[in-house]
Image 1: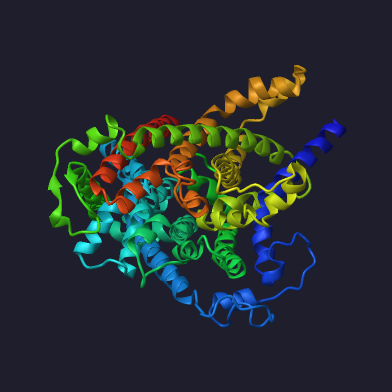
Image 2: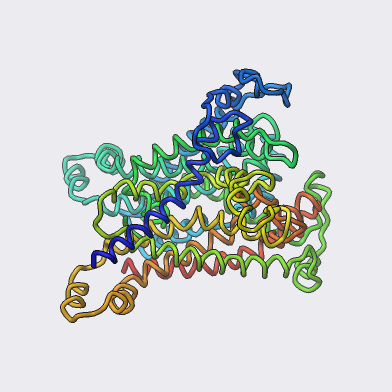
Length: 285
Length: 288
Protein backbone atom coordinates (compact mmCIF):
# COMPACT_ATOMS: atom_id res chain seq x y z
CA UNK A 1 0.00 0.00 0.00
CA UNK A 2 2.82 2.34 0.96
CA UNK A 3 4.73 1.75 -2.30
CA UNK A 4 1.57 2.23 -4.27
CA UNK A 5 0.76 5.55 -2.69
CA UNK A 6 4.31 6.80 -3.26
CA UNK A 7 4.01 5.79 -6.92
CA UNK A 8 0.68 7.60 -7.11
CA UNK A 9 2.19 10.72 -5.60
CA UNK A 10 5.07 10.69 -8.07
CA UNK A 11 2.65 10.29 -10.98
CA UNK A 12 0.51 13.13 -9.67
CA UNK A 13 3.56 15.33 -9.20
CA UNK A 14 4.56 14.70 -12.82
CA UNK A 15 1.08 15.62 -14.05
CA UNK A 16 1.02 18.80 -11.99
CA UNK A 17 4.47 19.78 -13.22
CA UNK A 18 3.16 19.27 -16.75
CA UNK A 19 0.13 21.47 -16.10
CA UNK A 20 2.11 24.21 -14.40
CA UNK A 21 5.35 24.42 -16.37
CA UNK A 22 4.00 26.39 -19.39
CA UNK A 23 2.54 28.97 -17.00
CA UNK A 24 5.80 29.04 -15.07
CA UNK A 25 7.65 29.51 -18.36
CA UNK A 26 5.45 32.44 -19.31
CA UNK A 27 5.97 34.00 -15.89
CA UNK A 28 9.76 33.80 -15.79
CA UNK A 29 10.16 34.72 -19.46
CA UNK A 30 8.31 37.95 -18.76
CA UNK A 31 11.16 38.95 -16.44
CA UNK A 32 13.95 38.09 -18.86
CA UNK A 33 16.16 40.22 -21.01
CA UNK A 34 16.07 39.52 -24.72
CA UNK A 35 19.36 37.63 -24.62
CA UNK A 36 18.10 35.22 -21.93
CA UNK A 37 14.66 34.56 -23.44
CA UNK A 38 15.32 30.97 -24.50
CA UNK A 39 17.80 30.07 -21.79
CA UNK A 40 16.76 27.11 -19.67
CA UNK A 41 19.09 28.30 -16.92
CA UNK A 42 16.88 29.22 -13.94
CA UNK A 43 19.41 31.87 -12.90
CA UNK A 44 19.20 35.05 -14.95
CA UNK A 45 19.31 38.77 -14.46
CA UNK A 46 15.66 39.73 -13.89
CA UNK A 47 14.22 42.83 -15.48
CA UNK A 48 10.93 44.72 -15.42
CA UNK A 49 11.67 46.19 -18.81
CA UNK A 50 9.20 43.89 -20.60
CA UNK A 51 6.37 45.24 -18.47
CA UNK A 52 7.47 48.81 -19.13
CA UNK A 53 7.52 48.07 -22.86
CA UNK A 54 4.08 46.49 -22.60
CA UNK A 55 2.65 49.66 -21.13
CA UNK A 56 4.53 51.86 -23.57
CA UNK A 57 6.83 53.27 -20.90
CA UNK A 58 10.07 52.06 -22.44
CA UNK A 59 11.48 50.86 -25.72
CA UNK A 60 12.52 47.30 -26.07
CA UNK A 61 16.11 46.67 -25.13
CA UNK A 62 17.05 50.27 -24.36
CA UNK A 63 17.52 49.90 -20.65
CA UNK A 64 19.42 46.67 -20.92
CA UNK A 65 21.86 48.19 -23.37
CA UNK A 66 20.96 45.49 -25.87
CA UNK A 67 20.80 46.17 -29.56
CA UNK A 68 17.62 47.93 -30.60
CA UNK A 69 15.58 45.95 -33.05
CA UNK A 70 12.46 48.07 -32.75
CA UNK A 71 12.36 51.77 -32.99
CA UNK A 72 8.71 52.34 -32.26
CA UNK A 73 7.07 52.27 -28.90
CA UNK A 74 3.63 50.87 -28.51
CA UNK A 75 1.39 50.65 -25.52
CA UNK A 76 -1.09 47.97 -24.62
CA UNK A 77 -2.97 50.29 -22.27
CA UNK A 78 -5.74 51.16 -24.78
CA UNK A 79 -6.25 47.49 -25.63
CA UNK A 80 -6.47 46.62 -21.94
CA UNK A 81 -8.96 49.44 -21.48
CA UNK A 82 -11.10 48.13 -24.38
CA UNK A 83 -11.09 44.64 -22.90
CA UNK A 84 -12.00 45.85 -19.42
CA UNK A 85 -14.76 48.23 -20.54
CA UNK A 86 -16.40 45.86 -23.03
CA UNK A 87 -16.21 42.84 -20.70
CA UNK A 88 -17.65 44.80 -17.78
CA UNK A 89 -20.57 46.31 -19.71
CA UNK A 90 -21.41 42.99 -21.36
CA UNK A 91 -21.22 41.20 -18.01
CA UNK A 92 -23.50 43.80 -16.45
CA UNK A 93 -26.09 43.41 -19.23
CA UNK A 94 -25.91 39.62 -19.21
CA UNK A 95 -26.19 39.32 -15.45
CA UNK A 96 -29.02 41.83 -15.00
CA UNK A 97 -31.13 40.41 -17.83
CA UNK A 98 -30.04 36.89 -16.91
CA UNK A 99 -31.05 37.28 -13.26
CA UNK A 100 -34.54 38.44 -14.26
CA UNK A 101 -35.10 35.71 -16.82
CA UNK A 102 -33.45 33.07 -14.62
CA UNK A 103 -35.74 34.03 -11.76
CA UNK A 104 -38.80 33.69 -13.94
CA UNK A 105 -37.64 30.29 -15.21
CA UNK A 106 -37.02 29.10 -11.66
CA UNK A 107 -40.19 30.43 -10.02
CA UNK A 108 -42.88 30.18 -12.69
CA UNK A 109 -42.12 26.74 -13.99
CA UNK A 110 -43.98 25.04 -16.78
CA UNK A 111 -43.15 22.51 -19.47
CA UNK A 112 -43.02 25.32 -22.04
CA UNK A 113 -40.78 27.57 -19.96
CA UNK A 114 -38.40 24.66 -19.41
CA UNK A 115 -38.21 24.01 -23.15
CA UNK A 116 -37.41 27.66 -23.69
CA UNK A 117 -34.69 27.62 -21.02
CA UNK A 118 -33.03 24.58 -22.60
CA UNK A 119 -33.22 26.20 -26.01
CA UNK A 120 -31.51 29.29 -24.61
CA UNK A 121 -28.78 27.10 -23.13
CA UNK A 122 -28.18 25.50 -26.52
CA UNK A 123 -27.45 28.97 -27.97
CA UNK A 124 -24.37 29.08 -25.77
CA UNK A 125 -22.91 26.12 -27.65
CA UNK A 126 -23.21 27.49 -31.19
CA UNK A 127 -19.84 27.88 -32.92
CA UNK A 128 -18.66 31.51 -32.58
CA UNK A 129 -17.44 31.43 -36.19
CA UNK A 130 -21.08 31.07 -37.25
CA UNK A 131 -22.01 34.34 -35.56
CA UNK A 132 -19.00 36.18 -36.95
CA UNK A 133 -20.24 36.61 -40.54
CA UNK A 134 -23.75 37.91 -39.75
CA UNK A 135 -22.50 40.12 -36.91
CA UNK A 136 -19.96 41.62 -39.30
CA UNK A 137 -22.74 42.44 -41.76
CA UNK A 138 -25.03 43.83 -39.04
CA UNK A 139 -22.41 46.06 -37.47
CA UNK A 140 -21.28 47.43 -40.81
CA UNK A 141 -24.85 48.22 -41.72
CA UNK A 142 -25.41 49.91 -38.34
CA UNK A 143 -22.11 51.78 -38.60
CA UNK A 144 -21.02 50.19 -35.32
CA UNK A 145 -18.07 48.30 -36.75
CA UNK A 146 -14.87 48.51 -34.66
CA UNK A 147 -16.39 50.11 -31.57
CA UNK A 148 -17.00 49.24 -27.93
CA UNK A 149 -20.73 48.53 -28.55
CA UNK A 150 -19.65 45.98 -31.16
CA UNK A 151 -17.64 44.12 -28.56
CA UNK A 152 -20.37 44.39 -25.94
CA UNK A 153 -22.97 42.90 -28.27
CA UNK A 154 -20.59 40.20 -29.49
CA UNK A 155 -19.83 39.14 -25.91
CA UNK A 156 -23.49 39.23 -24.98
CA UNK A 157 -24.26 36.59 -27.64
CA UNK A 158 -22.62 33.97 -25.45
CA UNK A 159 -22.76 35.62 -22.00
CA UNK A 160 -26.52 36.13 -21.91
CA UNK A 161 -27.58 32.51 -22.60
CA UNK A 162 -25.00 31.42 -20.04
CA UNK A 163 -26.16 33.93 -17.41
CA UNK A 164 -29.85 33.09 -17.86
CA UNK A 165 -29.21 29.39 -17.55
CA UNK A 166 -26.89 29.67 -14.54
CA UNK A 167 -29.13 32.14 -12.68
CA UNK A 168 -32.04 29.75 -13.18
CA UNK A 169 -29.99 27.16 -11.27
CA UNK A 170 -29.04 29.66 -8.56
CA UNK A 171 -32.66 30.66 -7.90
CA UNK A 172 -33.88 27.06 -8.02
CA UNK A 173 -31.65 26.34 -5.04
CA UNK A 174 -33.00 29.26 -3.05
CA UNK A 175 -35.88 28.24 -0.74
CA UNK A 176 -39.07 30.01 -1.73
CA UNK A 177 -40.27 30.70 1.88
CA UNK A 178 -38.68 34.13 2.29
CA UNK A 179 -40.22 35.45 -0.91
CA UNK A 180 -43.60 33.99 0.03
CA UNK A 181 -43.61 35.70 3.40
CA UNK A 182 -42.57 38.94 1.72
CA UNK A 183 -45.55 38.57 -0.62
CA UNK A 184 -47.84 37.95 2.36
CA UNK A 185 -46.45 41.10 3.96
CA UNK A 186 -47.68 43.04 0.96
CA UNK A 187 -44.59 43.19 -1.24
CA UNK A 188 -45.16 43.13 -4.98
CA UNK A 189 -43.61 40.25 -6.95
CA UNK A 190 -41.02 42.68 -8.29
CA UNK A 191 -40.02 43.70 -4.76
CA UNK A 192 -39.88 40.06 -3.70
CA UNK A 193 -37.44 39.47 -6.54
CA UNK A 194 -35.36 42.63 -6.09
CA UNK A 195 -35.34 42.98 -2.28
CA UNK A 196 -35.48 39.34 -1.18
CA UNK A 197 -34.41 36.79 -3.78
CA UNK A 198 -31.62 38.82 -5.36
CA UNK A 199 -29.75 39.76 -2.15
CA UNK A 200 -30.08 36.19 -0.87
CA UNK A 201 -28.38 34.81 -3.98
CA UNK A 202 -25.60 37.34 -4.19
CA UNK A 203 -22.84 34.68 -3.99
CA UNK A 204 -24.25 32.81 -6.97
CA UNK A 205 -24.81 36.08 -8.78
CA UNK A 206 -21.19 37.12 -8.21
CA UNK A 207 -19.92 33.75 -9.43
CA UNK A 208 -21.99 33.96 -12.62
CA UNK A 209 -20.79 37.54 -13.17
CA UNK A 210 -17.15 36.53 -12.72
CA UNK A 211 -17.53 33.63 -15.16
CA UNK A 212 -19.19 35.90 -17.75
CA UNK A 213 -16.36 38.38 -17.29
CA UNK A 214 -13.70 35.70 -17.75
CA UNK A 215 -15.33 34.32 -20.92
CA UNK A 216 -15.53 37.81 -22.39
CA UNK A 217 -12.03 38.76 -21.33
CA UNK A 218 -10.62 35.60 -22.95
CA UNK A 219 -12.69 35.92 -26.12
CA UNK A 220 -10.74 36.23 -29.37
CA UNK A 221 -12.51 35.19 -32.56
CA UNK A 222 -15.41 37.68 -32.60
CA UNK A 223 -13.43 40.67 -31.35
CA UNK A 224 -10.75 39.91 -33.90
CA UNK A 225 -13.15 39.81 -36.86
CA UNK A 226 -15.27 42.75 -35.68
CA UNK A 227 -12.51 45.24 -34.89
CA UNK A 228 -9.65 46.75 -36.84
CA UNK A 229 -8.13 49.62 -34.87
CA UNK A 230 -10.13 51.53 -32.32
CA UNK A 231 -11.72 48.69 -30.36
CA UNK A 232 -8.90 46.14 -30.49
CA UNK A 233 -8.81 44.04 -27.32
CA UNK A 234 -5.84 42.51 -25.53
CA UNK A 235 -6.23 39.05 -27.07
CA UNK A 236 -6.54 40.54 -30.55
CA UNK A 237 -3.48 42.71 -30.00
CA UNK A 238 -1.50 39.60 -29.04
CA UNK A 239 -2.43 37.96 -32.31
CA UNK A 240 -1.18 41.00 -34.23
CA UNK A 241 2.21 40.73 -32.56
CA UNK A 242 2.64 37.07 -33.43
CA UNK A 243 4.17 37.24 -36.89
CA UNK A 244 6.58 35.20 -38.93
CA UNK A 245 9.29 37.77 -38.30
CA UNK A 246 11.21 38.27 -35.11
CA UNK A 247 8.86 38.42 -32.19
CA UNK A 248 9.07 40.50 -29.07
CA UNK A 249 8.79 37.55 -26.74
CA UNK A 250 9.55 39.40 -23.52
CA UNK A 251 6.77 41.99 -23.78
CA UNK A 252 4.39 39.35 -25.17
CA UNK A 253 4.93 37.13 -22.15
CA UNK A 254 4.58 40.14 -19.85
CA UNK A 255 1.28 40.74 -21.62
CA UNK A 256 0.31 37.12 -21.10
CA UNK A 257 0.94 37.52 -17.37
CA UNK A 258 -1.03 40.77 -17.18
CA UNK A 259 -3.93 39.20 -19.09
CA UNK A 260 -3.94 36.04 -16.96
CA UNK A 261 -3.33 37.23 -13.40
CA UNK A 262 -6.76 38.88 -12.92
CA UNK A 263 -8.43 35.76 -14.32
CA UNK A 264 -6.49 33.47 -12.03
CA UNK A 265 -7.25 35.63 -8.97
CA UNK A 266 -10.94 35.83 -9.82
CA UNK A 267 -11.19 32.09 -10.36
CA UNK A 268 -9.83 31.52 -6.86
CA UNK A 269 -12.81 33.39 -5.39
CA UNK A 270 -15.31 31.23 -7.23
CA UNK A 271 -13.49 27.91 -7.06
CA UNK A 272 -16.66 26.24 -5.79
CA UNK A 273 -18.68 27.41 -8.79
CA UNK A 274 -16.20 26.79 -11.57
CA UNK A 275 -17.09 23.18 -12.32
CA UNK A 276 -20.75 24.05 -12.25
CA UNK A 277 -20.15 26.98 -14.55
CA UNK A 278 -17.98 25.11 -17.03
CA UNK A 279 -20.48 22.24 -17.26
CA UNK A 280 -23.54 24.53 -17.41
CA UNK A 281 -24.79 23.18 -14.11
CA UNK A 282 -24.61 19.53 -15.17
CA UNK A 283 -22.09 18.73 -12.44
CA UNK A 284 -22.35 20.50 -9.12
CA UNK A 285 -18.82 21.11 -7.92
CA UNK B 1 -47.37 31.96 -18.69
CA UNK B 2 -48.03 34.50 -15.97
CA UNK B 3 -47.77 38.20 -16.64
CA UNK B 4 -44.80 38.74 -14.33
CA UNK B 5 -42.77 35.89 -15.75
CA UNK B 6 -43.40 37.28 -19.22
CA UNK B 7 -42.18 40.70 -18.08
CA UNK B 8 -39.05 39.19 -16.57
CA UNK B 9 -38.16 37.07 -19.58
CA UNK B 10 -39.09 39.53 -22.34
CA UNK B 11 -35.94 41.73 -22.17
CA UNK B 12 -33.71 38.67 -22.52
CA UNK B 13 -35.76 37.29 -25.39
CA UNK B 14 -35.63 40.60 -27.25
CA UNK B 15 -31.88 40.78 -26.72
CA UNK B 16 -31.37 37.16 -27.84
CA UNK B 17 -33.52 37.69 -30.90
CA UNK B 18 -31.35 40.64 -31.87
CA UNK B 19 -27.89 39.26 -31.10
CA UNK B 20 -28.36 35.55 -31.64
CA UNK B 21 -31.46 34.48 -33.57
CA UNK B 22 -31.37 37.28 -36.12
CA UNK B 23 -27.68 36.62 -36.97
CA UNK B 24 -28.50 32.96 -37.45
CA UNK B 25 -31.27 33.93 -39.83
CA UNK B 26 -28.83 36.09 -41.79
CA UNK B 27 -26.49 33.11 -41.96
CA UNK B 28 -29.29 30.93 -43.28
CA UNK B 29 -30.11 33.52 -45.93
CA UNK B 30 -26.44 33.88 -46.95
CA UNK B 31 -26.24 30.14 -47.49
CA UNK B 32 -28.21 30.70 -50.69
CA UNK B 33 -26.35 33.83 -51.78
CA UNK B 34 -23.10 34.67 -53.47
CA UNK B 35 -21.62 37.26 -51.15
CA UNK B 36 -18.24 38.95 -50.97
CA UNK B 37 -17.78 40.17 -47.37
CA UNK B 38 -15.46 42.94 -48.47
CA UNK B 39 -18.21 44.49 -50.59
CA UNK B 40 -21.58 45.92 -49.49
CA UNK B 41 -24.23 43.32 -48.72
CA UNK B 42 -26.48 44.79 -51.43
CA UNK B 43 -24.11 43.36 -54.04
CA UNK B 44 -24.93 39.76 -53.14
CA UNK B 45 -26.85 37.60 -55.59
CA UNK B 46 -29.14 34.62 -55.14
CA UNK B 47 -27.51 31.38 -56.22
CA UNK B 48 -29.91 28.81 -54.77
CA UNK B 49 -28.32 25.60 -53.64
CA UNK B 50 -25.00 26.26 -55.39
CA UNK B 51 -23.05 26.82 -52.17
CA UNK B 52 -24.36 23.73 -50.40
CA UNK B 53 -23.98 21.68 -53.57
CA UNK B 54 -20.45 22.96 -54.11
CA UNK B 55 -19.38 22.01 -50.62
CA UNK B 56 -21.12 18.67 -50.28
CA UNK B 57 -20.78 17.34 -53.83
CA UNK B 58 -17.81 19.11 -55.37
CA UNK B 59 -15.77 19.29 -52.15
CA UNK B 60 -15.21 23.01 -52.70
CA UNK B 61 -12.80 24.65 -50.23
CA UNK B 62 -11.77 21.16 -49.13
CA UNK B 63 -15.01 20.69 -47.21
CA UNK B 64 -14.77 16.94 -46.73
CA UNK B 65 -11.04 17.03 -46.00
CA UNK B 66 -11.50 19.70 -43.33
CA UNK B 67 -14.46 17.88 -41.84
CA UNK B 68 -12.72 14.51 -41.67
CA UNK B 69 -9.55 16.09 -40.28
CA UNK B 70 -11.57 17.86 -37.59
CA UNK B 71 -13.52 14.73 -36.64
CA UNK B 72 -10.29 12.74 -36.36
CA UNK B 73 -8.53 15.42 -34.38
CA UNK B 74 -11.48 15.87 -32.01
CA UNK B 75 -11.58 12.10 -31.42
CA UNK B 76 -7.85 12.10 -30.73
CA UNK B 77 -7.71 15.02 -28.30
CA UNK B 78 -10.92 14.16 -26.47
CA UNK B 79 -9.86 10.56 -25.84
CA UNK B 80 -6.35 11.47 -24.66
CA UNK B 81 -7.75 14.24 -22.48
CA UNK B 82 -10.28 11.86 -21.05
CA UNK B 83 -7.76 9.18 -20.09
CA UNK B 84 -5.25 11.64 -18.64
CA UNK B 85 -7.97 13.67 -16.97
CA UNK B 86 -9.60 10.65 -15.36
CA UNK B 87 -6.21 9.49 -14.08
CA UNK B 88 -5.47 12.90 -12.61
CA UNK B 89 -8.96 13.10 -11.08
CA UNK B 90 -8.52 9.76 -9.32
CA UNK B 91 -5.07 10.74 -8.07
CA UNK B 92 -6.32 14.12 -6.87
CA UNK B 93 -9.40 12.86 -5.06
CA UNK B 94 -7.29 10.86 -2.58
CA UNK B 95 -6.36 12.41 0.74
CA UNK B 96 -2.81 13.77 0.70
CA UNK B 97 -0.82 16.75 1.84
CA UNK B 98 -0.99 19.67 -0.56
CA UNK B 99 -4.38 18.68 -1.95
CA UNK B 100 -5.73 22.22 -1.82
CA UNK B 101 -2.85 23.81 -3.70
CA UNK B 102 -2.77 21.00 -6.28
CA UNK B 103 -6.40 21.65 -7.10
CA UNK B 104 -5.77 25.34 -7.58
CA UNK B 105 -2.84 24.61 -9.90
CA UNK B 106 -5.01 22.28 -11.99
CA UNK B 107 -7.53 25.08 -12.39
CA UNK B 108 -5.15 27.50 -14.09
CA UNK B 109 -4.69 26.08 -17.60
CA UNK B 110 -8.49 25.91 -18.05
CA UNK B 111 -9.10 29.49 -17.05
CA UNK B 112 -6.48 31.34 -19.09
CA UNK B 113 -7.29 32.52 -22.59
CA UNK B 114 -6.57 30.06 -25.43
CA UNK B 115 -4.85 32.97 -27.14
CA UNK B 116 -2.39 33.28 -24.26
CA UNK B 117 -1.96 29.49 -24.22
CA UNK B 118 -1.21 29.58 -27.95
CA UNK B 119 1.28 32.38 -27.41
CA UNK B 120 3.15 30.49 -24.68
CA UNK B 121 3.30 27.30 -26.73
CA UNK B 122 4.51 29.31 -29.69
CA UNK B 123 7.61 30.05 -27.59
CA UNK B 124 7.85 26.47 -26.37
CA UNK B 125 7.76 25.16 -29.94
CA UNK B 126 10.01 27.87 -31.34
CA UNK B 127 12.06 26.07 -34.02
CA UNK B 128 15.37 27.74 -33.29
CA UNK B 129 15.67 27.86 -29.55
CA UNK B 130 12.37 26.87 -27.93
CA UNK B 131 12.44 24.67 -24.84
CA UNK B 132 10.88 21.75 -26.75
CA UNK B 133 13.83 21.64 -29.12
CA UNK B 134 16.38 22.38 -26.41
CA UNK B 135 15.17 19.33 -24.50
CA UNK B 136 14.48 17.04 -27.47
CA UNK B 137 17.32 18.22 -29.70
CA UNK B 138 20.12 16.28 -27.97
CA UNK B 139 17.96 13.14 -27.91
CA UNK B 140 16.82 13.31 -31.54
CA UNK B 141 20.08 14.71 -32.83
CA UNK B 142 18.34 17.40 -34.91
CA UNK B 143 15.94 20.24 -34.22
CA UNK B 144 12.32 19.90 -35.22
CA UNK B 145 10.57 22.64 -37.18
CA UNK B 146 7.49 22.26 -34.99
CA UNK B 147 5.08 24.60 -36.67
CA UNK B 148 6.49 24.35 -40.18
CA UNK B 149 6.06 20.64 -40.87
CA UNK B 150 2.77 18.72 -41.04
CA UNK B 151 3.21 16.04 -38.38
CA UNK B 152 5.13 18.17 -35.86
CA UNK B 153 2.53 20.94 -36.29
CA UNK B 154 -0.22 18.42 -35.61
CA UNK B 155 1.65 17.23 -32.51
CA UNK B 156 2.08 20.83 -31.38
CA UNK B 157 -1.61 21.79 -31.58
CA UNK B 158 -2.62 18.45 -30.06
CA UNK B 159 -0.25 18.83 -27.10
CA UNK B 160 -1.39 22.41 -26.53
CA UNK B 161 -5.03 21.37 -26.51
CA UNK B 162 -4.29 18.45 -24.21
CA UNK B 163 -2.41 20.74 -21.87
CA UNK B 164 -5.23 23.25 -21.69
CA UNK B 165 -8.25 20.96 -21.65
CA UNK B 166 -7.15 17.91 -19.64
CA UNK B 167 -7.54 19.94 -16.42
CA UNK B 168 -11.15 20.62 -17.41
CA UNK B 169 -11.81 16.87 -17.57
CA UNK B 170 -9.98 16.47 -14.26
CA UNK B 171 -12.02 19.17 -12.51
CA UNK B 172 -15.33 17.78 -13.68
CA UNK B 173 -14.55 14.14 -12.95
CA UNK B 174 -13.10 15.09 -9.57
CA UNK B 175 -16.38 16.78 -8.69
CA UNK B 176 -18.17 13.67 -9.97
CA UNK B 177 -15.98 11.37 -7.87
CA UNK B 178 -16.58 13.40 -4.75
CA UNK B 179 -20.33 13.27 -5.16
CA UNK B 180 -20.30 9.45 -5.21
CA UNK B 181 -21.82 7.59 -2.25
CA UNK B 182 -19.31 5.95 0.10
CA UNK B 183 -21.18 2.64 0.71
CA UNK B 184 -20.45 0.80 -2.56
CA UNK B 185 -16.73 1.38 -2.04
CA UNK B 186 -16.85 0.08 1.51
CA UNK B 187 -18.78 -2.97 0.33
CA UNK B 188 -16.21 -3.60 -2.40
CA UNK B 189 -13.41 -3.37 0.13
CA UNK B 190 -15.12 -5.83 2.47
CA UNK B 191 -15.66 -8.20 -0.44
CA UNK B 192 -11.92 -8.04 -1.10
CA UNK B 193 -12.12 -6.42 -4.53
CA UNK B 194 -8.79 -5.40 -6.06
CA UNK B 195 -8.17 -1.77 -6.94
CA UNK B 196 -8.77 -2.52 -10.63
CA UNK B 197 -12.00 -4.39 -9.86
CA UNK B 198 -13.23 -1.55 -7.67
CA UNK B 199 -12.46 0.92 -10.44
CA UNK B 200 -14.00 -1.19 -13.21
CA UNK B 201 -17.14 -2.38 -11.44
CA UNK B 202 -17.85 0.35 -8.87
CA UNK B 203 -16.26 3.69 -9.82
CA UNK B 204 -16.82 3.66 -13.58
CA UNK B 205 -20.52 2.68 -13.54
CA UNK B 206 -21.28 5.26 -10.84
CA UNK B 207 -19.40 7.90 -12.79
CA UNK B 208 -21.13 7.21 -16.13
CA UNK B 209 -23.17 10.37 -16.13
CA UNK B 210 -20.26 12.69 -15.33
CA UNK B 211 -18.21 10.92 -18.01
CA UNK B 212 -20.93 11.43 -20.62
CA UNK B 213 -21.20 15.13 -19.77
CA UNK B 214 -17.45 15.56 -20.05
CA UNK B 215 -17.35 13.75 -23.40
CA UNK B 216 -20.16 15.78 -24.90
CA UNK B 217 -18.92 19.15 -23.70
CA UNK B 218 -15.35 18.47 -24.72
CA UNK B 219 -16.48 17.25 -28.14
CA UNK B 220 -18.61 20.35 -28.72
CA UNK B 221 -15.87 22.75 -27.70
CA UNK B 222 -13.06 20.85 -29.42
CA UNK B 223 -15.16 21.00 -32.60
CA UNK B 224 -15.35 24.79 -32.24
CA UNK B 225 -11.60 25.22 -31.56
CA UNK B 226 -10.22 28.27 -33.31
CA UNK B 227 -8.12 30.62 -31.16
CA UNK B 228 -5.35 28.27 -30.11
CA UNK B 229 -4.78 26.82 -33.58
CA UNK B 230 -4.88 30.25 -35.14
CA UNK B 231 -2.16 31.44 -32.76
CA UNK B 232 0.05 28.40 -33.36
CA UNK B 233 -0.22 27.38 -37.01
CA UNK B 234 -3.06 29.39 -38.64
CA UNK B 235 -4.14 26.03 -40.02
CA UNK B 236 -0.82 25.37 -41.72
CA UNK B 237 1.55 24.21 -42.97
CA UNK B 238 -0.54 24.36 -46.13
CA UNK B 239 -3.91 23.26 -44.83
CA UNK B 240 -2.67 20.44 -42.68
CA UNK B 241 -3.96 21.57 -39.26
CA UNK B 242 -6.99 23.45 -40.53
CA UNK B 243 -10.09 22.61 -38.51
CA UNK B 244 -13.58 23.49 -39.75
CA UNK B 245 -13.69 26.78 -37.83
CA UNK B 246 -10.45 27.92 -39.47
CA UNK B 247 -11.68 26.69 -42.84
CA UNK B 248 -14.86 28.76 -42.50
CA UNK B 249 -12.72 31.77 -41.68
CA UNK B 250 -10.36 31.36 -44.67
CA UNK B 251 -13.26 30.61 -47.02
CA UNK B 252 -15.12 33.71 -45.92
CA UNK B 253 -12.39 36.27 -45.43
CA UNK B 254 -9.40 35.15 -47.46
CA UNK B 255 -11.24 33.61 -50.42
CA UNK B 256 -14.03 36.16 -49.96
CA UNK B 257 -16.70 33.54 -50.47
CA UNK B 258 -19.14 34.62 -47.76
CA UNK B 259 -21.95 32.44 -49.10
CA UNK B 260 -19.79 29.35 -48.96
CA UNK B 261 -18.60 30.35 -45.48
CA UNK B 262 -22.20 30.67 -44.28
CA UNK B 263 -23.20 27.35 -45.85
CA UNK B 264 -20.13 25.72 -44.31
CA UNK B 265 -20.95 27.04 -40.84
CA UNK B 266 -24.59 26.02 -41.19
CA UNK B 267 -23.58 22.42 -41.93
CA UNK B 268 -21.20 22.44 -38.96
CA UNK B 269 -24.00 23.84 -36.80
CA UNK B 270 -25.97 20.64 -37.47
CA UNK B 271 -23.24 18.63 -35.74
CA UNK B 272 -23.24 20.99 -32.79
CA UNK B 273 -27.04 20.90 -32.56
CA UNK B 274 -26.95 17.12 -32.55
CA UNK B 275 -24.39 17.07 -29.72
CA UNK B 276 -26.23 19.80 -27.79
CA UNK B 277 -29.48 17.86 -27.99
CA UNK B 278 -27.72 14.82 -26.53
CA UNK B 279 -26.31 17.01 -23.76
CA UNK B 280 -29.66 18.58 -22.97
CA UNK B 281 -31.49 15.25 -23.04
CA UNK B 282 -29.01 13.94 -20.51
CA UNK B 283 -29.31 17.05 -18.37
CA UNK B 284 -33.11 16.85 -18.41
CA UNK B 285 -33.08 13.19 -17.48
CA UNK B 286 -30.78 13.92 -14.56
CA UNK B 287 -33.13 16.67 -13.35
CA UNK B 288 -36.39 14.78 -13.35
